[in-house]
Image 1 (cartoon, helix red, strand yellow):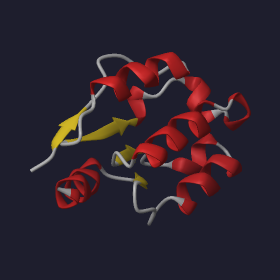
Image 2 (spheres, helix red, strand yellow; image 1 turned 90 degrees about the vertical axis):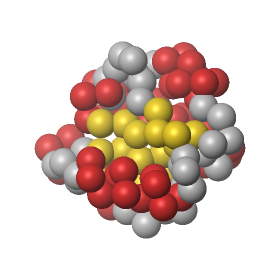
Image 3 (cartoon, one colour; image 1 turned 180 degrees about the vertical axis):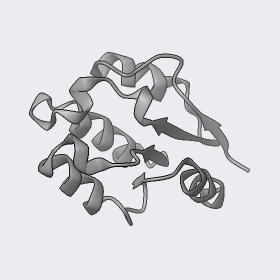
Image 4 (spheres, helix red, strand yellow; image 1 turned 30 degrees about the horizontal axis):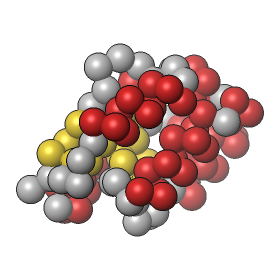
Length: 107
C-alpha cells in the first residue's frame, strides 16, 4: 500500500516542490489540496505548475491535486485540470476522497 505524503507548508516555488519530491520514495504518492498550493501555481504564466507536474511525470511518482472549482482560477487553469483528469501519473480531482482512492489504487 502506498504512503500518501502531503507538504508541511504551501508550495510557493520550485524549491518547495523539490523538497517535497526529495522526501518521496518509490512507495510514496503525493496529495496536494488547494490550500497546499501557493498563488503562483494557479498563475500558469509563472511556470510553477508546469515545473511541478513535469517533475512528477518524469519520475513517475503519482500526484493527486484536489481543486474543487478549477474554473475559479481562470480558463487556462480549468483547461489544465480538465486535461489531467485521466493522466496516468498526475491527476486533478474535485474531491479529496476521490483523490485518495486513486492514490491507494496506484499501489
